Length: 335
Image 1 (cartoon, helix red, strand yellow):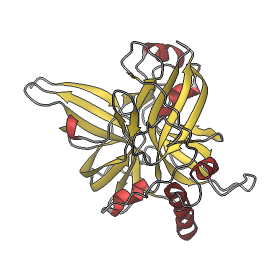
Image 2 (cartoon, helix red, strand yellow; image 1 turned 90 degrees about the vertical axis):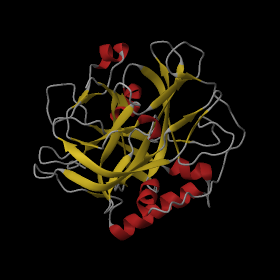
Image 3 (cartoon, one colour; image 1 turned 45 degrees about the vertical axis):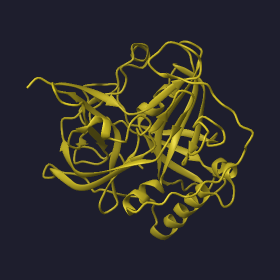
């Protein structure tokens, strides 16, 4: 049967200037409120709670060197582990994970004056771009990128970056008693007790074929005519299979491709069954979300997936996840 497939990357971006593009054009609203405390999210499923406790919405803001306009881009990030460095001041330094394609523009000649913001809960009348809901992270740097410029480099590339960030400004912004401070402090306590923040799935071998009962969650953007919010969404995935010949291109825009090349993820992937595209909740803004199994082991990172169009069928979507550790490559070994 005839079918068409294409790769879909799950992040979201918007211009704050009026221009004719395929991205959402929205203004940036300001507020005089400098602090805000939100009720902590609570979920019946402890697997979803586990992911939420480690995850944040990541907003980047930058000036394009192509058209000199300001842009916002949304993705999801989560805490990998604490940074153990006696030379760093404070108790809120962490290694954080997201997709390369979420922050790639801010790392090239395509942009200047990039800023990074974290949030974990949006509600009410404000936009996600509003300072009411976000905290700027000034001390943030790229520790490791895992993309290769060689599209022929099999099993040596992954849509994944590690950032090092000081979340003290997030604590200061929302203050004592806020849900986000409680969330981060609980992670510090967990780290003291467990000697880690996450457990990772052991290396996959050629004998592994499927993993049952997986969970993924993140912060997709929710758009309207005048504003863009994000919300925490999650999916329980009954089964993921392993694709040992997976690849996807990170950059498909002609201007970007000219400057930084066509980056290619050549790593092994988990993939879920095709689902109705309109029913899958982890849409734009969820790029970078954590995938875990029923035993709370981190399996990989969500980068997007494959869209499929078949005659007389609704559009379908196959979620895909880059695998951190296989017998071909362990991308976390250096950490």
